Length: 597
Image (tube, rainbow, N blue to C red):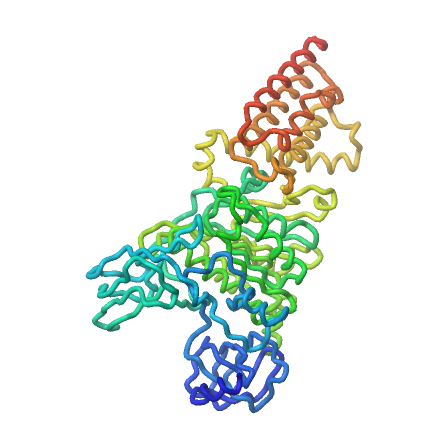
């Protein structure tokens, strides 16, 4: 089959392989070749991309296993950059790093055969298209032509490609169409007649254009207390989750995918171990969307690229995912992209850079590591689309520093470009404290930006958050003193800080992902939990300072255990139970006062 296709491409020969080094090929006798153009290599028709041109020579990175490729093999041009197909049928799909459908490739075997070339979108499935424009309308790039109900929850809006425009001279009637059927024809004085289908292609390395980008101001609520309350992220914001092996990066991203109030989830498994990607592929289809009761996959796209796949495809997978995310953002949806992990992506850059014999920078990473990370995270944002709609793309990148060392280059460069830093702690994970986000190392620059959103829930949010953080900071300082002089040397008021911090850590920050009640915590419940803990502190402080009550007496209060069990015993729709616990707390405190008066 490959030989037949080769004969058809013979007239498109653009060069001959002179040297091959893993996924990198040096091509000579180059003609009619452009930077970033996709090529087919050898009789196997392996997919590659031009990354360097010099005289009559070119450097190509190949996205597939290059065994069997040799000097003298032909390279065939396609005339197009590496692009993804964007249209109905993306949701619920599982792709590899260059958008090949893995569920269809599975029919060929458990491993991806070389040279396989399947369309990313199903060409046979029919969709119910409803036009939203009329003949004679003037459309510009990004305008909405019509709608397709892709899933029970998501209406897929068919867009004019950003680089097209013109007057509508034909629009298909409402009915059943395939993705490659012509549904609209535009007439433009410069471009002439342009046939539009239900899908179009877009280069992955080029950000899709927008009208305007706004400062993120609305919280992307995740239902995870340590994130939402202490280190919130805004819609269109950026966050990084650094952590060593076993600290819970994958489970944390599962929780964000399941519970965040994003409309669309893009999950990019970039270079992780095969068993971890397998876990994602098995778990995601089983996850239930709490908003609809239907499978979460109905609003999810998965890009799966395991560590045993070619490193070049790993590098491309990030761009494939973010381009699909931008496409749904352009429809006016709020999109959250989870990249797990950017460290493996950076390692792919390092390997390719080494094969290209580029001058290495810190720890062997290329000097352009920072600029590549910046270009990735800068594609996030809360924007006005070309059609005038508001949409957002939120980027959350996991980082896997070797040995949990946050001083390594990928983590340090990522911190420069993300405004949320959720540092996962190995010691917390070993104590079974999950999410293992270290409150002393983590931060968020979105606290002030999302305060207006939180103020709709409770106008005292910032004060509550600051008081919780102050107690945790004081506890951290006191723990260092305790290691030197012991707990008994502390005054009662400072021992009280340690006790209240324990209640905050176990009763508020710790959250059980697999508990039916605790897996998701509403904003109203988070506020009430914070308030009752702080009330416990205020009342206890009064007992210690004014009534000389020892902290050991306070520790025996029944209401403390009740407060710590709120997270697993009080559902989000029964918050009046927290008020009942507060009454028990006040009654207990009054009885203690009577005894010590």
